[in-house]
Length: 447
Image 1 (cartoon, rainbow, N blue to C red):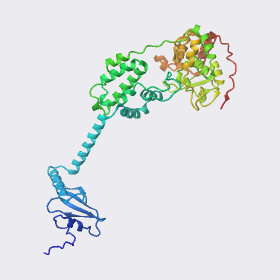
Image 2 (image 1 turned 45 degrees about the horizontal axis):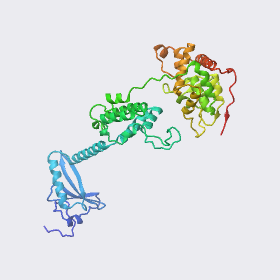
Image 3 (image 1 turned 180 degrees about the horizontal axis):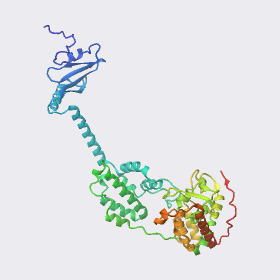
Image 4 (image 1 turned 45 degrees about the vertical axis):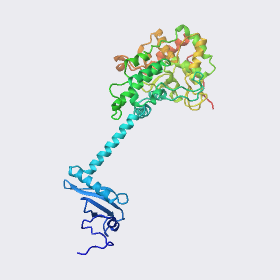
């Protein structure tokens, strides 16, 4: 048989000694998508050529009567000897009964897992905290979500109010922990943090500690973070709890004898919106934030009802009593909020703690908070022996007894009987002359 010329295309039916020349002369036969040239030295090694002319080294063999084909690499990037070495390595893997493709996939998975583990080991508390908030936010209310943002914020933002003369906001209690690696968030670290924060802001620190415990509990349930937190929740220690102390029950409330002085001081506040807000707060017994969130659409003047958005039932409807109705009717309509801000468009008033403190100082009343006005409503109602369930329903408290939960359904008109009686008595004790049958003032719009 005559020896083929160097210019002839290789015979694909026979094994050939792979050379650079043989590879360069390799061409895909007409009418086929690909063809293979087998090597005579390394069993299983082939050079594949496609109809487009692309050439690559491949390894081909059988495992459990199935053809295994594994691409080694482009002929431009791999030398013939490198391809033969790789083919022999794959042959050894195949002889051990393992599929080289599965071996490679397992190696890639192991490498990815190792990289992920390394990333978790170096992950900061702030990075994991962001993932935690993103996952859990759909299950939280707005206030709870805002607590997570507020307690972890960096601070340093310019502000004209609420900075005690600093001009910039301060960092939240949780912010010092966000830069730490998650693996470094140990019990001693948290205990030292708790002791430090408790010296300046114990109330905020206690809330931050509760959020931190929930966060670490979530981390312990995640497969990627659980190995970093070995053992029990590092925030649940006796030292941390003792450092933060217990919250003291507040008992600030208006006395019956203080009503004249308080109303006189509040009604003399220069901002009528603030004055109306504080009086509404006392006469409805609602939470400060609930009153601020009131919108004009929440006032039902036909049936004299007031819709309150609360944190227990989502919303509740309470009577729109005569005096409160007159207060609200006299306010200008700046935007959708009843107690609208005069400084910022489309926002409600910020809680007027400073204005209330000044009014209390004028009235010689010490340490009365905005929430103390809510407490005052419930306390003053005791003078009239109003059923406790009525007061709880108006204020939005959860029913405390089986009868209240299942056997007391008080419609709005029944609540109105008691609520208007409470309002009339408070106004009488405050020395305010008011005609409950007088028509509320016409609402007016301002720009």
